[in-house]
Every structure is written in C-alpha cells, then in structure tokens.
Image (cartoon, rainbow over all chains, first blue to last red; front, side, top):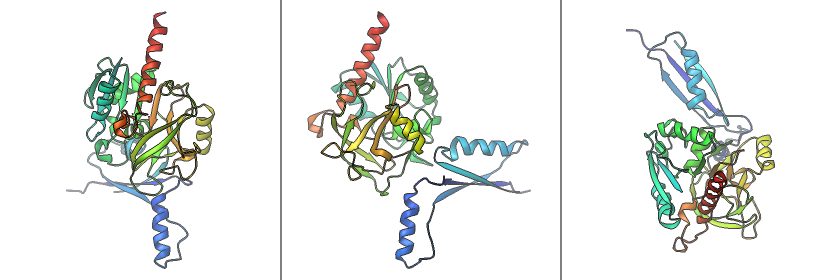
Length: 83
Length: 237
C-alpha cells in the first residue's frame, strides 16, 4: 500500500506585525548569552495527510489555508508538498 | 425588544449576558445554540465571551463556521444589531464582520481587571445613552485583546469614527500605561463602517449593578435598546 502524500503548511505573522512571543524568546536567548541572533519570529505548521486527490488538491489546500489555517489579515502561509 | 445570546461550545459569559439583559435591563432574551439556524426573531444578537471551541487554532477561528453564524452573517448584512464581547469580538474579526485582528496581549499574560473606557462617540447605536468623552468602568478578562490592523486601515477606522471605546487613565488620557494589552491607539471597541456591528474586549455584562463593582456596562445595553426603539418608532411613521 502506498503511503498517503502530505502537505505541510507554515503559517507566520506578516512582516511588520509585532510578535510578542518572538520578542520574549529573543530576549531570553540574549540573556542566555546567545548574542548571535538579531530577532526571533514565531509561527506554526500543520501537516495535512491527503486521503484522496481528485486532481485539484492544490486548490483545496490553498482554500483551507485562506479560510481556516491562517488569518489573512495578519498572517501569511506557505505550502510544501511531499509526494 | 428581544435579544439573542449565542452559545458556542466553550462560551462562558452567555449566562452573564442573559442575566444582565433579562434581569437588569429587563428585556426579552433567548439563548441561541451554535448548531441552530434560527435566530428566533431576535432584534439584536450578542456573541458572548468565553473560549469558543477551546480557542483552538486561534481565538474565534472555528466558531465562525458554526451553523448559527450563517444566520448571524445574513442578519448583520441586512443591518441587524450584532455585538461581540471579548471572544465574541474575536469571532467577529475572524469572520470578517469587523476589520483587523485581535492578537495575543503584548505582555503575554491574561489580563483580568477593571479598566476605564472613554466613549469616543455618542452617535453609535451602542453608545447613544452615553456622552462623548464620558468614562466607563468596565472589566476586561482576556489573553488575546491586542487590537491590530495596518496603519492605513487604522486611520480609516479613526477617520470614520468607528473607534467607539478607548482604554484611558483616570485623567481620561489614552496613555501607554492605561493600555492593558498593547492595542493600537488604545482601541477597546470598534464598529463596522455601517455602525450596526460592535466588537469590544471589555465585558459590559459583568458590570451592570453596583454590587459588581460598577453598573457602567448597562449603559451599552441601554444604548442598544434606545437605538432599537428609535428605529422601530421611525419605521412606523
């Protein structure tokens, strides 16, 4: 049986949108002595396991990103497909 | 006048809103279950505070797909009065009825305390029983109340008079210190452009009697009632 293919969706805050968690993590790193990093931005990812593909799966993935996984007002997303 | 209070799984201020409207404002109220598709003829809809769908994914993100929300969207589009309180505000931004987004509090902590709100306009449906510049004492209780939008959009909100409430200090100034969550321009509540939809992070339903520490929240509900009665009267003439 072949393994289902997957899509990984990365959701990040748009550039310019303040990320208080990233700022706090960056402060912690600096306090820990890691001066190498200028900033930290947080985000999240979703792994979608694809059960059936009627040929328009890329469009469907775009749809769920825009409708649910990301909030297009403040976030952007990228999709990686693994066969 | 009949209010409808929506209950999503995880709503926890639905009974507070119900009690405030029924026993203090003394108006008719119905609970509207999230799976229902019937607004039961309500004249104004309240999306209450809480943690709809456990705040999974993002606060308010999943509630927008509840069956009841289809009806709320149609009701709002036809000019119906909708008010989202706290989580309800988050739901309204997520479903696009209100502009912008509510992000995590800047200091990353849950904020639960009384705040002072300056009424920025008295011509809104939701503030007509108040005067402009008046200060209301109403509590907040949230983790994602940090209102965000892009500069041009914020400017449009301000220019259109859509900012209804702002966090201020005792002197009535919108200072950084008076801002409990990092909200841009100390924004605590906004309406849509048409003015029939309100989102506010503070909880007016938790401050409707002096024994609760303040009765100022009642002014918001009284405003809604006054606005509604005047439209009904206008409709009859």
